[in-house]
Image (tube, rainbow, N blue to C red; front, side, top):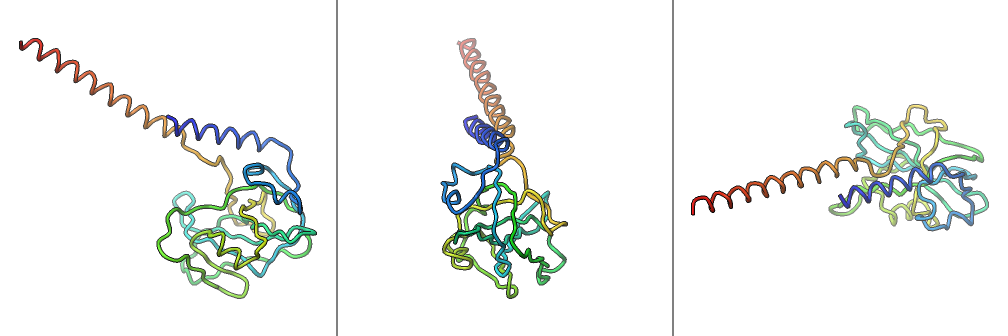
Length: 214
């Protein structure tokens, strides 16, 4: 029940921030701690670094395998770089097929939502980086140190999910509450309480039976 309550608090904070005015990410505000801007709607101006696309493999949506595509975005008048989550895309028939990632050229002003980089849990062994072509890298896990070495030492530790696609019309944007299924935790709690109550009744009946035998 405590875990369910924690999820509810997180989701309530998410909903509250979704209704607040957008924050403009610039050379000052990008340095804000992630706890102060996570889940906020943001606007940012700058240009995409189209030669350093990141493909995050093994991402499941509705029981279908696919990947997330990221393109770094350099903030206007700043060295700061933010990874922009362009959305989820299903796997093709062959892993050898390289996704067609259309470049987004010229100066852009985009809208999105600040989010933590996805975590894939425990990683056994070294995180592998696979260079697919001159502008795309495929990775199995978002390792911040590896991403900084690939992209820029000024890379922020969070990502921005696009509010709407730019050119990626077929990509599926990942939106929704950050920690769903708090009802499942309450369901587990109910099962444990019911089992404890059942055992208590059995204990009482066995005790009463022993007293009758005496």
